[in-house]
Image (spheres, rainbow, N blue to C red):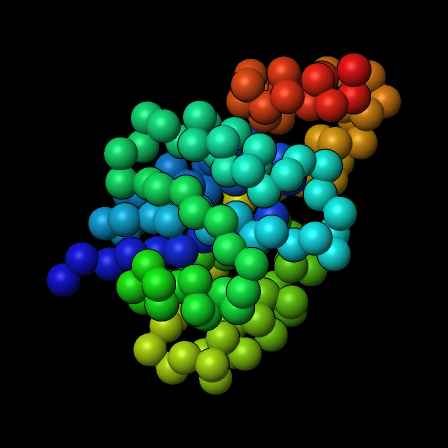
Length: 159
């Protein structure tokens, strides 16, 4: 039986931390769907289409990984892709409480879907999209934290 994992998030923008988790997931699961949430409440810097295009460029070498956008319940997105696993990353112990709560709620909404929590690599544990955007906005160098295409897109946004 092939197992599809869904890795949801806003990915505004996709960082090297996200990419590392996607690479690791691609070794664990037959298919990985990076599900990019529209999430207008967060007022993302990049449009959903821009975030999807950047993610496609970044994960292009990973043949078992696909990109999709969604604006409904995560469980509905998982079911559309026949995903049996929701993948979430943990950067710090403080992430666990929120992720545990979400995993329990998702389990109530669909008991057939499991949640897998993967810790961030030691090298990427401090990287967040919010910090990357702040550094880029203030003119800092973000090339250590994101793919070159993402760095260029941030430079275009902040001119």
